[in-house]
Image (cartoon, rainbow, N blue to C red; front, side, top):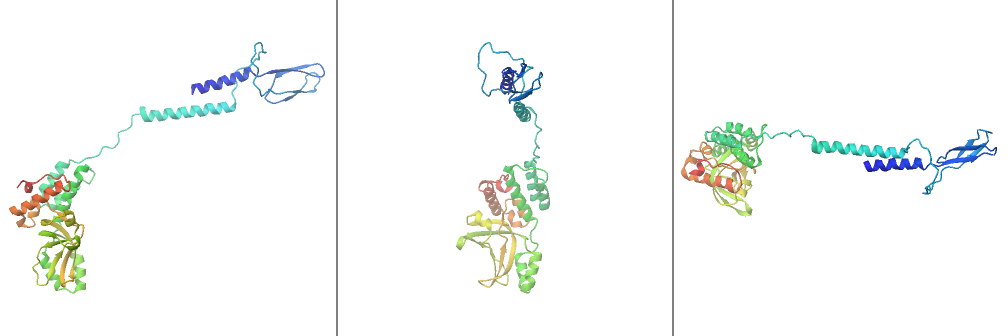
Length: 325
C-alpha cells in the first residue's frame, strides 16, 4: 500500500512540475502570461479586451532536457481518480487488519463444553436396578443419559441395549399367551380385533425357545402353545432372528403385533412387531419374570448372548454375574 501511495504522490508532483506556462502576445502588443490548462483557453486581453486564444497542454510527455523553464507550483495536486484509488486501498487494508485481529489476535470465547454424563456410574446403577426388578427406575436412571447430558459415542449403544431391555421388561403381559388365545377363541372375530388392539398390541412377551432356519430365509421357533384350539408362534418376520443368524436356544423378548386365525390350519397365530425383538443379557433381571431363568443352563444362554452383544454387536456392556458363571 505504501508503494502505491508513493507512486500516486510522485505522479501528482511530476504532473505539477511539468505543467507548462504560456506567453501569448495580443494584437495590441500586450503579452498575456499564465499556466496552460488541459484544454484550450480564450482569455480577454487586459489592455484592449480582445479575446486571445491559448492552446492547451500537449498530451505528449515533455522533453527531458536541462535548462527548461522552471514552473512555480503550489504543491502536488492529485486527481479525483487518485483519491478514489487511495480510498479503496485504505479500505482494503483496514478490512484486512480487522480480519487478522479476529482470526489471530482476538481471544475467542470458548465453545459450549459438552455435559458428559458419567456413563460408568449410570450403566452400573441401571444394571443394579434391573437386577432388583425395578425396571421403571432403571429406565428413569438411563433417561439421564438423554436429558441435558451427553453420552459418548462408544457408550451410546450400551445405553440403547439396556434401555430396550428395561423398557421391554417393564411392559410384560400380565397373562400367558395360552390364556389370551383361549379368550380370543370365545370372542366374536370383530370384537376380538377391537379388544386385542386396545389391550394387547405392543405388550411384551419373554420367550425361551430354540430357533431354527426355515424356508425362504426365515426362522421357526420351537415353542408349543398348550391350547385347546390349534395355535403357533410365527417369527419369520422378526428382525432379531435374522440379525442373530444362527440356530439354537434363545432367550429374548418381543412385542405383540397380532393374534388371529390364519391358514394353513386354520390356527391361531401369534405375530410380533418386526423390529421389537430384544436379545436379553441381564440374567437377574429376566429371572424375575421367569424363575427358570435363574437355573444354571439358562445362565449359560445369557452368558452366550451377552458375549454376542459385547463382541458381535460391539456394545460396551460390562459382563454381569451371568457371564461370570
